[in-house]
Length: 306
Image (cartoon, rainbow, N blue to C red; front, side):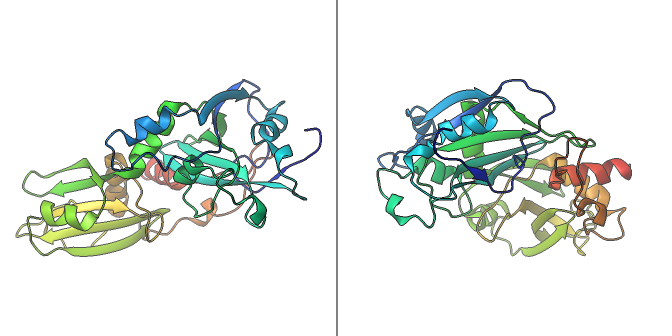
């Protein structure tokens, strides 16, 4: 970094303290427009990934900040007190995806078509408009341990991230078959529900469970079932749809494994609030803030109660 320096907002990457100094593969998301590709095209994601806007590169703890500044092309922007912003853009069991970019929100002179980063804006979920290069990181946060590592991220990971953004995983249950299973839903869930429930009236329940936001839509039957554990008061559930929301408009993915653990714990826990020990700020032996996300907390409580 010859001229410009860069600071970073809080994220899992807050401190460049890694458990090892191995080279890590990251993805550079370059500036550019993708508006010529129709989102209605069934090959939309594949066509995006074929563009020259994505570049793989490596870094380690020694080269982290210098490489970050170089790849974000910080010298291009004449901004005092420049900072990089990082947002969580996706979660999977044991993995968290983050997108880092230059915070140009108050620098309107750079809000131009030449600087726009349509692909980064597609990946991002917090509503920011991104006018610089961006970097996609993947963080490994296993359960039942305080280990945290930035790990390799590839185009296949990005493809899965974008696919699961459009085709959300929900869990459906049917008392007749007495089983739960995963399904993929695109678009309006009400349309899916009307078809799945075959036109029957259905109830809706939203419940916080540890760090999960749980939504269950269900119909009433004539026999007791355990499709929803103690999450809802109705015992005569005929069919149900489980899903989770990150915000009022952003639906996330919910796996069958998560639902089974939630049902199991709903029969054992006295309340579903996140224990205070997971809300307290703690540091690991490298001085990094220990991250407790919804997967980690669910797995820990399941482990402690089974």
